[in-house]
Image (cartoon, rainbow, N blue to C red):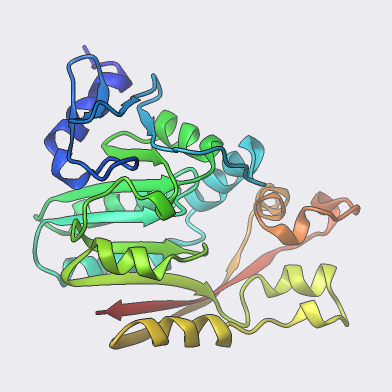
Length: 285
């Protein structure tokens, strides 16, 4: 009989308790038989029935809701981002060791789940996956849908992790906290940040922002800031135009800010292809 998700997650966290630090006092943490994560100073955090733990120490709001995360899950599971997942998997494989990977701004966890699956298919090394997001709805969805990964609601400004805990930190189409990334990274570890390139979702930009400044996009400022924070930087570009099933079009619009305020019938746009054009920034300290 399968274990309840809460117990399964508690066992996973117990095996990897050395990754965690109390977000209140910074002390080491342990996981009790009652599925509670607690430090020696008795700051405690319950593991929810969906298998996630909420490490937030202050109130926070997010513009991202349940419907957005469900849409993102379906789009990502369709394989639209598979080349990016493969490229990241290859970077992790080259480390030639068991890897602990933190996905920051993980949302509903679909990217990390796909990367984990590819890694386990292609490598005999172990994979410990941890996802963190300030958006509780995303983490609830992650805990509900994906086993074998530790899901945390939390804020990297009050991080629930020990320093030098992770071989790789992922930051996929999400804001970055470079100071905390460098604190959490093991020696010779990698920060892997994914940012849009000029052609990313260009069909949607042409559709909704034609003849406006938003029709074009540049990631120059983001890339320069990344380079300022790391001694060694490599950039890999992933780009291809893919046929898209019509039922994915409204989902794709729902998961990107471009579609949030559009009044037109997205499903009636007859969009038949989409361009995924991304830069993978690889940083070493």
